[in-house]
Length: 241
Image 1: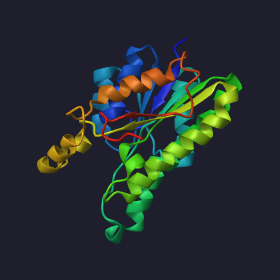
Image 2: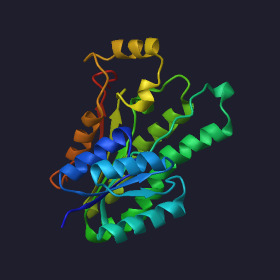
Image 3: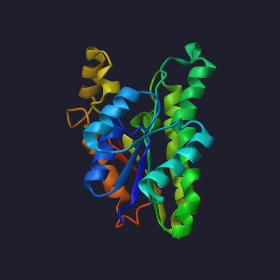
């Protein structure tokens, strides 16, 4: 029986690529989304991947969402990709608490909410794969993104701690830290700013969503059971440490 995989923020951008790659690799995939019903239905029609609407920043909604996925897909969630994320960029002196909190809740608390909803079952079955999508800006920081950088940096610590808890139970927990990837979010950056960003990437191009999805596929494989607590940077060499 195919393993059930859930991808949060799984209908657009990097999440879409991850969902499609998992399906093509034989996983039984559920794609979560938060708001855009039209885009989600188009995604479902194009890919045949079922979509589930719930707010990943809401703990109770995540618990119910996981139950709905398991009921509809006919098996327990064994693979979780915490990809959902938003930006509310501005400098600290202009940032409201609402802008701070929205990003922390959606980008970081969602990792707790979703992982908590699946961890008991993974421990009981002695198998689980959790991959959290961090960011180069969580590793290096970024002007105007104290909320986003804090949330993504938190993901890296969350990953290491949960990896230690899950290791004896066959659960691996890893993170992927993308650099600048050619998605809708990055394409919204002004052209002159984007040119400066690309100039700082040693390989000379933006990343592709498939660069990230291939990394996720590697980490969730049954054979990847000796890799846990790691953060894989996929950034074209822009940030190394």
